[in-house]
Structures are given as structure tokens and as C-alpha cells.
Length: 397
Image (cartoon, rainbow, N blue to C red; front, top):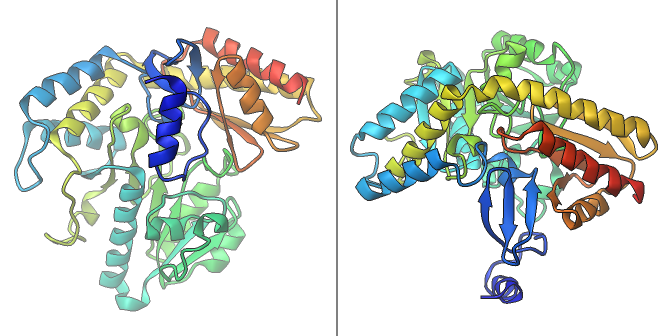
């Protein structure tokens, strides 16, 4: 199949819900992907913060091949050794006692919202049901997580949405305090907003959120789908700010490219769900667990996570140099670790297109924020090449 044939076939048969770039990817290696025409691209979108070990990592390839030859799926009505090993290491890196495994970030957040509601009912009956999230947040595309997402354009056409959700400006502690009450069962936040524009909250904000949740006996849920698994220079962003949530959701990087997610809780919440209250056919299947175990143990053995902070600081410093060079074009540079971006003074799509022509993949979110989430194994030399491409793109922007 030729490139255009592949595009035309996908356009004919796939639902037209994605705004795709005009390339057909064929394979990858490290931080690069290659299209059907043999062109190579440095990928700083990383499958949207997923391929934390890059492409074609031998540890992941080996884990998939060996586990697929043994057992891919058997349902959660049985135990498997690989699931036991996976949940143990995930418990260790999350700092939590109990883990539930899913197939995606949206499913992870859906489970967390269900747990918060069930907790509220146990504590205060049906009157303790409200869930507060942040404006400009993104939590998924199921009906509940879509409702939790604080961006109205994602919700258009899906009314009536589930009730009991409210939104406050991210980083505004006074607004949250005004919205809180004893009828709140949960507050769900991304510790750094990714899809909403790479927004880092003010220092001390998350600590005050923790205090308000404690005051009103509401569960603090951190959606670390994008910030977790080393992305921000610690296993999870909550560890950078020393604010521990009651429920921690994760996905993306935990599978290194394989669909995998989950949520983790302390022992005090382990019995909120009774047997039969929650479940899933494919979550925690043997193949996904083998990959997750390989990813986590490799990140540990190679000391990759601590290096992310240094790489991120280097990347941010280079972007700030670009801001100084183009002050009328770059409004702000922000991020932590290898979740970084900059806000532009006008729509940023031309920057994405220019970079693509130069063999670099970056992403534009919310219209005018260039977001970059490269593999955690990225080198400073690759960062320099991407910054050079951004520089050239900004010249004519």
C-alpha cells in the first residue's frame, strides 16, 4: 500500500474524528519515527506522552513477545504471576497501597470518580455527591470524564450530561474555597494541566487544596495521566510538590506504548468498593502487565526518572532563550520536566507545520500553546535540534 492509498483508505473507513497530519508512520527507533516514504522525524509528541522509553525499545519488544507466547488474557477471575508483579511495582512507585488496572486514562479517571461518589454515599448519603474540577482541565471522553473536563467545547452536543459537577479556575484557591462544602465528595485536578495548555499552578496551591479536602472530608484525586511515570522529573508530580492525593490515576507512560492505566489508593479506601462494585474484562491483562512491569523496572534500573528534571531544565532554558529572541511571538514558557510548552501570541498551527517540514513533530493545544512531551530517553542533542527547528519556524511566524 502506498502512502496516499493508506491515507485515502483510512479517510474512507475511519470515523472522521481526528485532525491528522499528512504523514503515514511506518516504524520508530528511539526518539525518531519513520514514514512510508523513508523520511525520519524527531518525535516530541511521543504518542501524546506515551512512549516514555521511545520506540522499539528492546525491553518492551522482549516483554511483548515472551508474554504473548505464554498468555495474553485470562480475565480477572483468575490470578496471574505477572499481574501480581506489576501491581507490586506500581504500588511502590505510586506510594499507594492498592491498585486497580484499566486500559486507558479515561477509564482510570472514570473509576476514580465512581470511587469518590461511593465514598461520599458511605460518608453522607446521597447528599454528599458533588465533584469539583478545574476549568481548562481534560480528564477523558467517557460521559463522566467528559463532564469532569472543564472545557465546554468538548461537551457540546452531549447534553444532558451527568449532574453534580462544578468547575473553578485552576490555581485560584479562593474560588475553590467558595465552592467547597460538606456535600463535596471529591476534587479532581491535574497537578499540571497538559491538554489545557501546560499550566503549572502557583506555589502552595495544591497544599491548600489538600487542606480544604481534609476539612470537608472530600477525596483529593490527582489525574496524573500525563504528568506521571517520570514525566515531570519524579515518579509522579505530587512528589515534586509533596502533596499526596487520596486517589492517583495513571496511564500513558505506564505501558510505554501499550494500552494500560489504573488508579491507586491508600489502604483506608481499599474497601470502599465491595466485590462486584467495579471491574473490567481487559484491565490488567497479562500482556499489559508484562509491558508495564518491563517499563517500570527499566526506568528504575537505568535511573531515567532523576535525569528528566535536568533535561527539562535544559529544555526550558533553551525555550526561554527563544522567548527573549521573539518576545512579541512567545507570551510565556512553562512546564516541568519533559512536559513543556510555550504560549504564542496567535494561533500556533503554522509552527507545527513548519517543524513537520523540518522533520520535527510538535503539538499545538488550545489553539496557541506549543506542547512538547518527548520520550524520557531524549538527549540534549535532540533537544537542540528541536529548538533549532522552532527557531526557524518562529522566524516567519
